[in-house]
Length: 352
Image 1: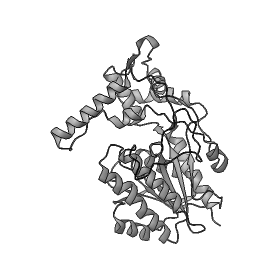
Image 2 (image 1 turned 90 degrees about the vertical axis):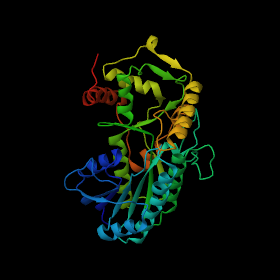
Image 3 (image 1 turned 45 degrees about the vertical axis):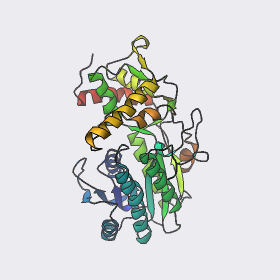
Image 4 (image 1 turned 180 degrees about the vertical axis):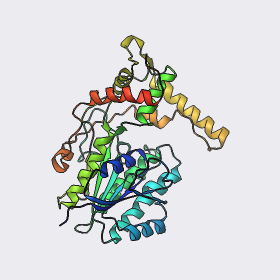
């Protein structure tokens, strides 16, 4: 059995995680060619990579792409933002994933299918360190889940169910909050609060704890899963939690970043706003936007993000360590400090 990756397809390879995965794959001598499919493959491009414009919710486009490039390994990192319209979320995360799985099953060269799962896809269990055995995915009938959470949960379950050894092995790499260099989402959003002097604001009591994962480690976990499949290891049809293996309150993470960026927040500077108040304001804002823009625009403050702060996310990554050989970051604090120093310069925010 050959352990070479051969031709690799990265779905969503122009997004943040996907483009970092492409960068990591370029250091792997196992790849003979790297292909990326994206709706608009215009950003985060790398040399010696073939880019394809395509819509994975279009089954004919997906079939044509697989027939053309014949990938041996498929990494599926694509997803709209969590606040995208329900129809787009379902088309991409559910229909698109199913189209990719069918084409992978029908393409004789395809051996490994790695999907990026999300912490949003699970029922929150405050105070419980979840393992893969006790975690409960939402379903399409879960009334407490938002559209993004349900679509990611359905896709997670579909990928695991599509495992069909020895011809195709499927794995889900489940990641929590993602952060890293050139990150306009997590890191950029937090640091931009400094511009408005809102970095001292804390929503709620800051007691629920969360996990985060450094982008390089998230990419490493995906690559490790593909390697284990091609080595013939028994990992197919399974899901794996990966993180930095550090559980901490959300605003503790944020304030470590602010300190690294030269804007430390002392205890006496913290302004606590009741969570119920912010949640109510978010609900009102969403309603007003819906009424006055006919649903064409959405507010920056979203109720689903505020609600998420109440539950937390604690994961046990023992399974990923044992079966994939995954190792988390050695020092999360050092990485956060380095990112704070570098990203504040990139974003053009003055240090104190």
